[in-house]
Amino acid sequence: DSLSSWLNVLPTVRDNFHLSPNEFRDTLCLRYAKPLLNLPHSCDGSGSPLTTSHALDCKKGGLITLRHNEIRDVLHDVSSMAWSQVIKEPLVRQAQSDSVALVGDISIRGVWQSQST
Image (cartoon, rainbow, N blue to C red; front, side, top):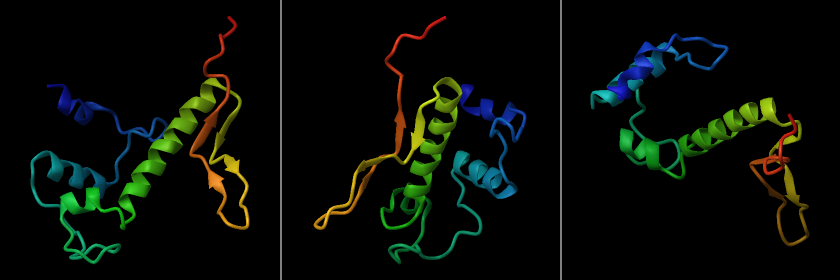
């Protein structure tokens, strides 16, 4: 089945296809619905008991931000290969006396322009 194809991928660092031993064990535990090993007893963000489901959903802990930033970073790296004007965390609006600065995730200029061949 295609869901297990990741197990056949060579663990190359260059293509970001490598997993640490802990990541590999955690992935296998998730795949086979086993409890994760070495999890803290409580969430560092909310103090709730830390389950796999809580870790993936908690808005106060850091996992959602980490996953979001990882996707942003991969999108930035891949986009930089195709376009020259790619900016990570561009400033959208300067801070004002009554509001904080507004920062985007990524800016990619030229995506919708025809590419010359």
